[in-house]
Image (cartoon, rainbow, N blue to C red; front, side, top):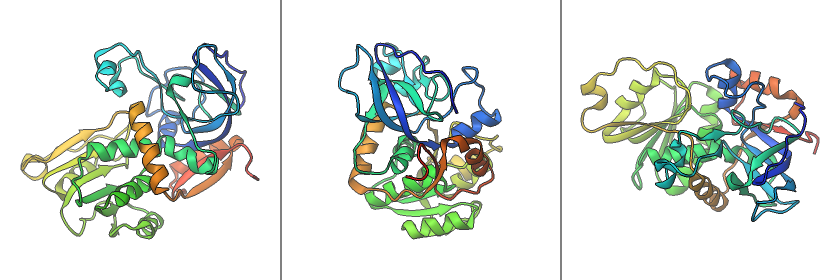
Length: 317
C-alpha cells in the first residue's frame, strides 16, 4: 500500500519497513469483525524496519537502528491501569494498524516509547511475527497459569499458537494441540507436541491449562471440559464468536477458571523477546510482497497458511 508520509512528532520514529507480519486481527478489521477507529488506516502491527528519521524528543534510537513496532502503540501513562503496570487496560490505549498507520506500506511512523530494539542477525520475516503472534502468545501463556511440568492444551494452531507451543515446550511442560487442519497438526508434532488431534476431540489426558487461539466460541466449553480440577483456560484473541451456554458443574466447578487476554504491556514484549532470543523459535513463514497484502489476507481467511504469513519489502531478497 502507498500513502503520503506522516509528519514525525517529537517522540516518533520514521521507519522504513523491511517486513510486516499478517495477523488475524488485521483480518478481523478487514472483514468488519472489529469496528475501525480511523478511516483508511493502514493495517499491520508486526513491523520490522530501519529508523530513517528520529523525533526531537526521542532518546535511545538513532538513524539506521533496527526496530520493531507491535500492536500497542500508545497509552495515557497516567490512569490507574498505567500506573499499576496494566497499561494494556488503559482506556485511552492506541493500537498500530487501528489508531495509527501500520506496516502494510513502505514506511510507517511509530512512537519510539513503544518500539523495540531488534537484533541484526535474524531475517526480518522471522522477527516480524514475534511482535504480536509471539508477544500475545506469551501473555496468554502467563494468563493460563500453567504450573511447572504441567499439561497444556492449545486450541487452534496458527501464527501465534505455533510460537507459543515452542515457548511452552522450552519451559518443560507437555503440550497437546487440538486444531482442525491436518497440516497444522503435523507441524505441531514436528515442533514437539505430545499429541495433535481435532479441535473438538478430547486430549489424551486432563489439562492443567489451555489457551484458545481459534476465534471460535463453541470451543470454550470444549476446552473447559478438558481441564483438570483447578485448571485455567485463557482466550487469546481480540475477537471471539458467541460462547454457548456453559454448564456450571461440567465446565466451571472444581475451581476451573476462564480468563480473557487483552493486548499486552511493553513489559510483556521485552520479556518475550528476551525469552525468544534464548530459545530461538522456528518460525514457519510464507512470504508475500507488500503489494500482495490482499492475497495474504485472503489466504489467511481461507486457512491456506500453515505457520505465519509475512509481507516483505523485497520478496526476492
